[in-house]
Length: 534
Image (cartoon, rainbow, N blue to C red; front, side, top):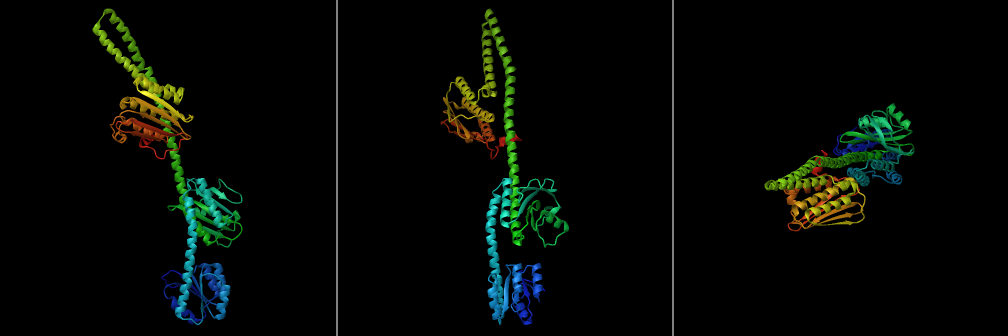
């Protein structure tokens, strides 16, 4: 019969025909433990197969058959053996290991109490030591799982761990489809090698039953189970199966199934180990899925931003053509008409009209010149026709001619072929930097350096102008040049590059653009890039 307990540990008192001995045991145990008392050896063996006990108390009078049978069923159980000199000597020879205590008759109640406590304490120490030994590899396994973000490699890692630790013949990892109706095999190890595209409906078969109930399933040939589960086990050709759910936040995402066709069946320690492993594996799989989705979204964002940049260039070309074919042509036509009118006025010698006409003509000529500059900036023909290096050279040449500012250009390293989207970025950043020099820097010299390296392109634009405070300019929405500098930064970040601006009052300005030639995904998009994407 069972009694109330303070510790929760359970003691089985077996084969005690001596009423006085049973009374002593109950006196020592008191209310601290749950106690079951069984008068026969057979009854004790049957009970211990149904329930787990922490301590067995038995006499040695009838031999050690009961103790040996119990130890086969549960090697970790603590034992207190009570007997005479002969029985104790026999026990010492046959029971060489395990948490146990031997008590020689006659004994006092205090000796009995110490024997019980000593055996239980040794069991606790062995259990804690076993758990510690199990936790160390589990900690390493956890680091391995959490450090892997590629799903295919993560599946392989999980299967290898299960294969190695449980000595299973076949291991498969199955995940629920989007509808949650079918389990799909994502990876498997076994005699037939890797299995793909295997499916099992939720509620059907062993894995389907586990997915539906969210309960682990450990089966052997002796396990009493429902007929449909037995049939599924037979179809697998296995004599021992261990099937566990992969659960994240109370939701089943898949099933880990392992089976054996030979050797020892799966044990309770295998079940305990895989239960912990599946908890970690489920979290690792969910993390890897999230990483995969984020990576896919980043790739999509990058594509959209590149498309936006190319669309922007197309729009520039359209506007350029419209200005060239529309307003610019009308301005040129007006200039020709004024020239004709000027000749007429010269014939009649109308001095004042000639002066006014001359001023109008100058204004129109300046407007035509500015329109041509805008057209060239919108869509430089050399960039598409002659390539980046020649386009930059022509732009610098025109810049020097228009402004009178001395310039130099230099190429370091071996020029590499770069994608058009990067060429556009280099040209636009250089163009914007030269525009800022022309409008604001009051410089007398500009240097442009293109530095080709193995995996990146570096562009340096340096002037000897009056300089400025970059943080002040970038932080002030109304500052001169702020929009241009911010545009450079956003353009570079969109392509996974960086912009560095070095400047100080009276010390000139250096702008350094760095772009990856094999462009990786940007770690984080700038606010402007996010706006472009939205």
